[in-house]
Length: 80
Picture 1 (cartoon, helix red, strand yellow):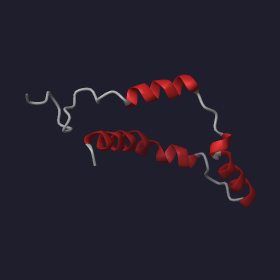
Picture 2 (cartoon, helix red, strand yellow):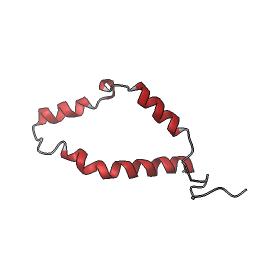
Picture 3 (tube, helix red, strand yellow):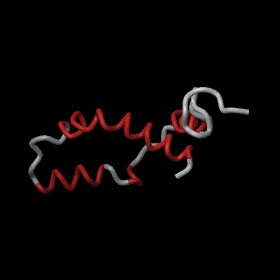
């Protein structure tokens, strides 16, 4: 894994993990098969709404190096 990929993975885990229980709670008690399928269908890619401004901000941020990290993933400045 490249340092860039590793930092992306770490940020994704750090942001997503705390939201698992909240997200799961949104579906608690749903047992009807038709409702479950309808909910799953609502996540299909062709049903997604592209938020252009948010997508542009996220794309620009993804191209920037992580603040305060050297190329090797350690804090501080890289040695010359």
